[in-house]
Amino acid sequence: MNAASRRRAGRFVLLLLIGLVVGALLTELFVRFMPESAARDFFTTSVAAALGPLVMDLVAVGLTVGPLVFNLNALSVVGVLVVLLAARTWL
Image 1 (tube, rainbow, N blue to C red):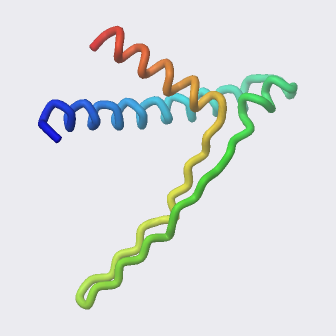
Image 2: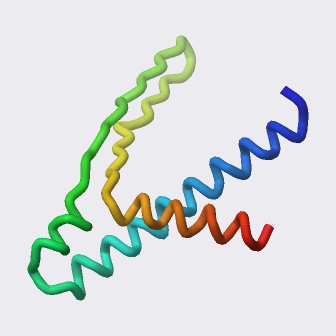
């Protein structure tokens, strides 16, 4: 794996995380300002996947990370697509 492909993978992960944050913000806006309807239910219903907790117990140090939960809904996908398209256009 050369430096260019590592940089490209790092940028993709960063853009993916930014897109998930934008999607979470869109979800919160929809929950707060959209009236109760089928469209609101569709856009704000999420599927959760959990990882963890991850425990590393060494002799001198113990570390526990987690649980890490991913909530994915339609607005998260929209946020990721918007950020990826904007990055493709501007970068």
